[in-house]
Image (cartoon, rainbow, N blue to C red; front, side, top):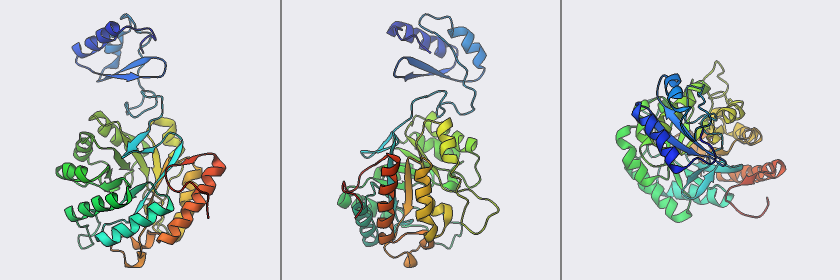
Length: 343
């Protein structure tokens, strides 16, 4: 921690000392003073080397294994901008769209509908990781073209999943935000690649990840140069089979007490059942989530992927009306959408 009156020369001197000892310094400007994060092993040695330097008021070890995503390192909450849409900062942001991009007509119809209902981001999978090799696995590059077209028509920024490091550049060219899905939550090569992509990243919690493992995955992305990470709780695998997964809503306030990154909730994958999605979406808002990720399809019964958990356009519109009522009661702000109240 630097003194509030530390000079540029004193700051440069500390940074030089850190580098000279083989550590990686990162300047972290705050509201009142500058902090210099130091990445590397044996923190006691570097502490002794810098604590007495001019301008330094304290050298504080970070106790958590995740450094850059933790509140110890970065006490101010982050806001991530996705194509001009903010996630975090006390407002609520809703991303909606189909699990898989099936055709331009299907995607544009969904995008137009969710935009009219008040969503501010479009989600849709061009590349789909599926448990069975015989399931529909997306349209690939053609699906990316449909996402571009839907964004052009509606103005909604696009979030879509990337599956492999080799595809990051291709997907990043079409998307405003890259999603790392639950099956890839500990694919460290992919995490490093999206960290170097320059695009915001939506990081879903792994199927059986602990909160610490989830945050360490986010650390991979941030440590590779990308601070714009949004965490997504989407349910974890437990003994329960009545729902697709078990939605861990306690993770929302817990992670917010540990990390400065925004946290959103995906009630669709968490429950696996359409009739459960609205209630869990509202519960996520009440729990303090920074946003929602909801699957919507014009005709869910005909969907090629995850139809049983997808809302119809009418159901999504009703959910958004309920969300407006709830955020008003909670004194939050809903990002985007119509300015009028529920009809």
